[in-house]
Image (tube, rainbow, N blue to C red; front, side):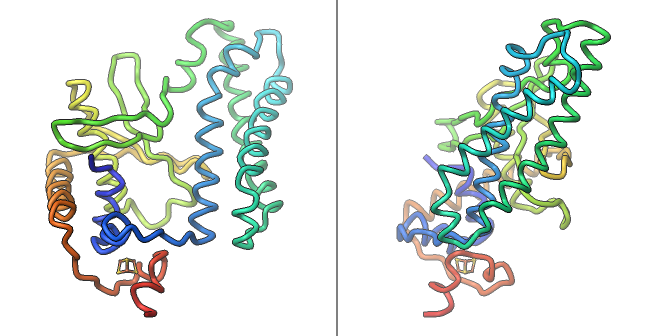
Amino acid sequence: MIYVTDLTEYFFCPYKLYLKKIKGLPLPQTPEMVVGSVIHKIYEEVLSRERIIIEQRITEEMGIDEIFRILYADSKRVIKNVMIKNKEKLKNLNVDYLELIKELQEELKEEELLNSIRIKKYMGQWGKDEKLYSSLFFMKDMEYPISSNELGLSGKIDKLEKDSEGNVFPVELKTGLFSKGIRKHEKLQVAAYALLLEKEKGIEVPVGFLEYYQVKQRLPLLIKNEDKLEVLEILSKVKSMFEKQEEPSKEKKSHCQKCGYYDYCWQT
Ligand code: SF4
């Protein structure tokens, strides 16, 4: 089975996918990669716990401060747990561990304060009814696993959102700032998930999202037929590379500087 991330890796650089999957060369982790994956994990866990915390621990009588205290305490607990698990890895890469905790706490503090205000406002109008969560937040599944035997493709969608009419939207969570426009491999990734969802659910999935959660920015992506065709085209190239164990040529491009294999490719 081929993974959606194999397609994006191939799109980034076929040689990189070859080194990783055919040669089995471990990808050296840069501090940016490790910090990015730690932040990703924290947000993913906070979002996946959100519904249960709101439904089980928030009551109609609570004020904004108390709601905030509960939500924020839970976010801080998630930050602490994930950071403890990754402490050694971060320290070995000289990442300022305490500073990172402080930054994440500040980001989530703002997020939870906004959530508390929205929850209180809703309860003030409608009470704490069963629609509270779905009215304020999309219903969602985090880390939704998906695969298609027909395509020979599988993956895990960061966040799968559903609206009340049965539409589904794949959402990719991103760290950092949205500053350089939507990058082609990001669009390809969302289109691949849309294609898999169409196969699984038998419905059209014409829209997905990129969510830059640290800056609370969310970008819709229209998924056109040509995007899905491109996914299929790359999928067939990856299949062929894996089957034939072919070594693709490597090209030195600007993105090589940020690649964990830089030394292997260009310093030896
Ligand atoms: S350093 Fe450049 S050529 Fe080598 S794997 Fe990375 S992106 Fe590809």
